[in-house]
Amino acid sequence: MTMKPTIQTATGIFMDILALFSAGCANQPTVPALPETAYTAIAADAVNQLAALYPPAKTHFLLKANDNTLFNNAVKRQLRNGGYALHESTGEVPANSDAKQLTYVLDPLTDVAFYGYYRLTLSIDEAQLSRLYDANNLSKPNYWSYRK
Image (cartoon, rainbow, N blue to C red; front, side, top):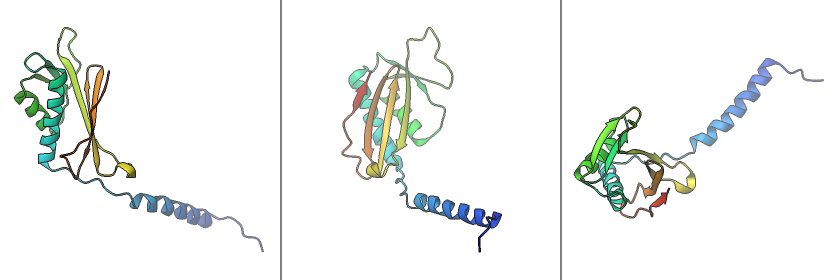
C-alpha cells in the first residue's frame, strides 16, 4: 500500500516545520526596558565623552533626530546643559554650515551572549563613538571605542 501525497499531508508537514521555528523564537529572552533615569545617565555619559573630544562653547552640533523619545529628550537636554550649540534637523545639513552632524543609535543587543546590554553609537560627521551599557548595572559601563 503506497501513500499518495495530498494537500492535507503537505499542510501538516508545513505546520510542523512552522511550529519548530516558532518554538525557537519563543525561548528568546526579552531585553529589560530602561527606566527614565537610565536614559539620563547614558545621555550624560555620552556628553561627557563628547566634551573630551569636542570642546563645549566652541562646537555646534546639528542633531539629526526627529523622534520625541525619552532618550532623545535627554540627549538634547544634556548637550544644551553641557554648553553645546544645538540645532535640530530632520533634513539635510546646509552646505555652508560649520555644525558637526550628530546622530545616535541606542539599541538593545539581542544576542544571548550579550543579553541585557544596550549599545550606544554616536556618529559625529565621519567619526563614531560606541559603548556598551549593562541594563542591570549602569554604574559600570564598558570602555568607549572611537573610530574615525
